[in-house]
Amino acid sequence: MAKLSPPEVEPSLPVAKELPLYRIDREQFEASGRSFWATASARFCKSCQRKYGASGAEDGRSRAKRPAKGAKAPDPFAVVKDCCSKTAGYLDNGLPITEAMFRILLAHGHRPLDLAEMQGRLESWAATAERRRDLSLPTIRRILDHATFYNINRVPPEAAESTKRA
Image (cartoon, rainbow, N blue to C red; front, top):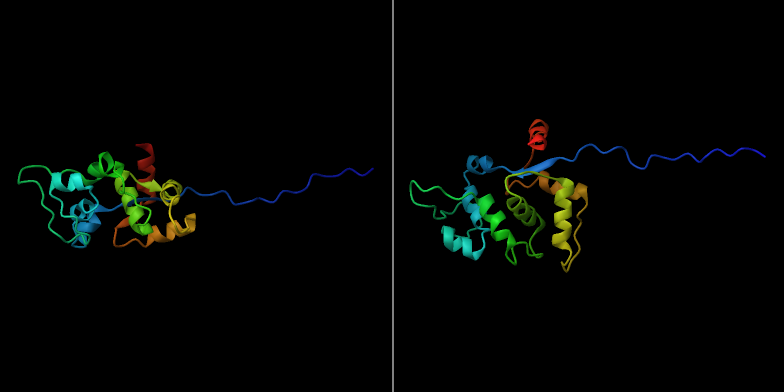
């Protein structure tokens, strides 16, 4: 009887490189003449809008009230992470996908997220949506790479390495 050799196994997928990291670039807001404070504070919950005098304007050009001179303005990332992201409706499933990504990054603090983490959070967000959305990694990457209004940028590889070590 002839000896059978085991079937050859084709590699399913090439070994994946690490997924890129993304974060909101505050400096790019200011460089483009838009206010990060105004844009982020427009996503504050009603309570924080009253507390910090935020206007709720969407374009990032409005003059949201800031604390009086000498008083330090609160960090919008911390406000959203500690309060607003925990309120009902912060991540309403009717939001456009890029707006949801921006809010997810705000709620994550100033730490970057990789594509897989973003995908997981988007899948949780979209689970109860009435319409299905393409939340594949290539789609999420394409959207994040072109999210110019929200100044979401890919973290450079050298900065990503230092982020991992921290």
